[in-house]
Image (cartoon, rainbow, N blue to C red; front, side):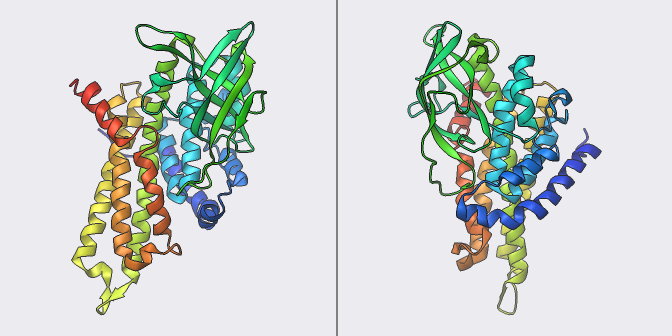
Amino acid sequence: MDFTLSTEQQMIRDLCKNFVKNEIAPIAEEMDETGHFPYEVWKKLGDLGIVGIPIPEEYSGGEMDWVSMMIAIEEISRGDASLGVSLLDSVTLPMNLINTFGTKEQKEKWLTPLATGENIGAFGLTEAQAGSDANAIQTRAVLDGEEWVINGTKQFITNAGLKHNSLVIIAAVTGEGSGTKKRISNIIVPTGVGGYNFGEKYKKIGWKASETRELIFDDCRVPKENILGNPEKGYNQFMMALQTSRIGFGAHSVGLAQAIFDVSLSYAKEREQFGKTISKFQAIQFKLADMIMEIELARLMVYKAAWQKDQKENYFATSTYAKVFASEVAKRCADKGVQIHGGYGLMDEYPISRYWREVKFEEILDGTSEIQRLNIAQKVLKL
């Protein structure tokens, strides 16, 4: 059992750390204030090969492992949560789906520009009445000759509406399945096609530079060949992608928790009370010790889940553990970090206040902590 990163994985970590230091950290606060997505930074991520890490070389990817991808997501998220979530959503969902289930023609047309950072992808599953319950999806696609006609609304969709967003892959009902289940298929919908419109950008408490919108489909027509893989297996397809995304959210949480620890440790070494820095007080030391211990435990579970995916093992349990544990670690670290900062932790001049606003997303998106615990109870423990 070897826990050492390979030379290539360490190179990815070093590359991302340097990129964060030079390109992301200097603008992170501005991104939070303005909500502006840094397109030029995204293109640089693509040029460096970070966006396409797990994608085959023939589609302009790095053809590297998912552990490397999670390392990249962790480090970019450590620099800025908005960029981190845009990266993990584009790679683990639409890019992952196209790479796994797409035809050669679909990969050449859609995957290559996503892997290079020229474009960014989105995935549309959630609806007003279909969040945790995917079978409650109401968006429908009906085959009319050589076209799918789509009607319905999606909400809380990340990356949709960005000026370089080229597509959304939506989950839509295309017929009746077995028993009470609907037949759900995944369909590629290009940005700009008639009948596909964006709602207003949501105003969020954090991750403000990451675009999140409602998507409206009103007799939206796309070619028949835009169906992804077997139309009878759409549910299984997006569940695979969601489990990969949950590893990504675990990595995102670890990166954010690490950033919280970094600023908390730095502040504790500088802030003086009663004639010495507060880092010398046991109450502060215990908080910092708990933070770094839990961060490392969460990181190990994220890497294990990614390694199992690379080994083509069943990673359902570990990805679920990683998502729940890492997201709650980030939340606990944020609470401790604000407490260490005291009154300054409540001031927007300090990044800890931004981190505290951002960590709550981790426990809700891509399956709430409650749903993940239900999955563990029912699908892992067979209760």
